[in-house]
Length: 494
Image (cartoon, rainbow, N blue to C red; front, side, top):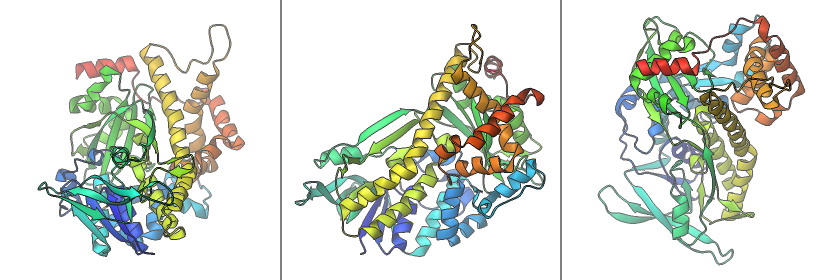
């Protein structure tokens, strides 16, 4: 049964869910509060597209295999448009070929593809594609200010039947809909709107990601090649994380991340200090060498980052009917892992399945989507919470002048937590680069194709990591970057 669907938010999540549901025959209207006229080209969009409601568009992004494959299988024309705009498919096969002689591949390896593309380019191409279908109405400059609802006599829950709108000229109106989808991102006001109509507020669990970060974009010079075909590459120095993200049209970005309370490291938010860091870290220097690339932006920062989950279902019942949250409005984690857009695509198709399966039953639609959230989305958040907690502990130890990886205590006993951290630090990377099965297993999790818990509990994976760890002294020491005290001197000089 076709429904009138209103999507709040016209960024990537809103556009994706609108496209998916319109393909199912629903009448879909996207409401984007920012007046966002579409520039003529991706580069024009990158240089000046005003996206005040989505400041992350000028940050590094990763479009993982899970998302790439959904586009490939469900929207092949969209994938072609992205490739035509300069996006690239970076494959597991090319990555493995850098490290292994004659690796044996499997058919499923073709699913391990990183879509190298700037976030602005993705959104620009996606919006053009959505508009070209003629199936979705996109209204710019219309801000949703609240919900219109009445109590459902059967369940006693508030049933949402539309939204209150305020246009750019201040005029107000009401737009009716059978289902309201909140795709407005991590700054969602849905919880406030629910309270205003007499429904409970959404319970929220939130904790710091333990980082702020800054990103800068570059373009490879004519005739220059990427120094690596690994896709996303990076490292964690304990006090500083860094990553290199390939983009479209021969661009790439570098992201530097540090702890919010590490005041000296906040210097990386300024372009001169950012440059000093890239000059002092061997891997980054290789990419930013003036003979290889040139910067095309200044450093742009993001702060106040939190791992957050909001609950729209409590004790097996939705908080209201006729409205649902999706994407970052419901669940979002540390953005440095690049899973946000992939989770949005997963959620969009899950919602389409729920609408098809439970047409006319708004309660069942919410509960069906909630089951997907628990099985497909929540495990990634839980894994990120654990990783961030461990990273915060490491950084705090370094700031105290302690070695967080010191395994042997003064009394001769072993610090088990430090031991496990050191095993991961010195065993995981070498194990991955020396064995195609290990590389495949790790990359399937990195691309969200396999459950992360299964990898961590696989005895063979653990054995391979331990073997690589035990041979750490036989390998040449890899210098990932300066120690913290040296880096502070470098930043002070900047």
